[in-house]
Length: 416
Image (tube, rainbow, N blue to C red):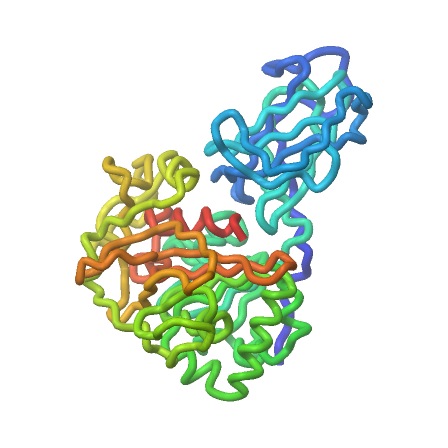
């Protein structure tokens, strides 16, 4: 029997670091007349969310002469790009790598400010001319689920972002999560948590979630997909085509290959729109490459350069389990360290013919073959998106901070 522990949508309190919220006769201390400056963060109130659209709706006490209609994707003064506002706006901007955006406003009264990034959206109220404000993203319409896996713990990364409480070892404290957990590796109580194999047969339950994270797990087709395989695959495909977001790592790659064979060409699988033999791409060596990967998207690289990370080799040195003050997730040459690869990690060759995918991270394997390591692609016409990564969290070295690769995975949560 399953007992649902959390109700969605989640309402997170916005903590605004400003002088006051109401109308005033002048500029708040530290503010600039005619401007609003907002820093958008993850729910932990610390990590910035970059590339978010921030805007003042035209209905927020703005004269008709000031209204502009945004028709294309935005590009701000620092080169950040973001989606257009979902309504007519008096002013709009993209948050930079520090999560900050500055908007033009009028008067000194309270003004509604809205923001949108991936599946996350929300709003807050700030006085025009007030001191710079900080707001964690408000997940007023987000419903996330995480499927547990033997070699990966994306639930810990989400907890560190503020979607749960983290233990002294850097693990999610069960019961504090503001997302649904499904049992994908027989580690959770059947009384409190649904089994993922059953959820895949329940299209109503799948449709509840805006994003589903499937952790790396072994024997995917020999376990969760061993019965009713075609139905489960069809249900997952329908979920994404209807606008759902799917986040899959490493040995769980068959959730992507079997449901969406026309997008990613996995190793040893040929090419085309027919799914390859299950598990065929799982022949990567855990010695991998030179342990440094290339960041292929400039905005991600800029954001990574401002993040604090743990140091040390996360495959062999687990003594560093807290943030040690090192800033910059990338190496001095711009590469990023990726570790904790499994023997037999699933490998990609690239995009299938005619398919469009975005490659975020690439690396060179032991055979000197360049390979995409993290990709996303859009599926269907309803906003569905899939992420696949050949690496995952550093499950063998938990930490209350972040390893460099976990910073990449954190960033991409907000790209879905």
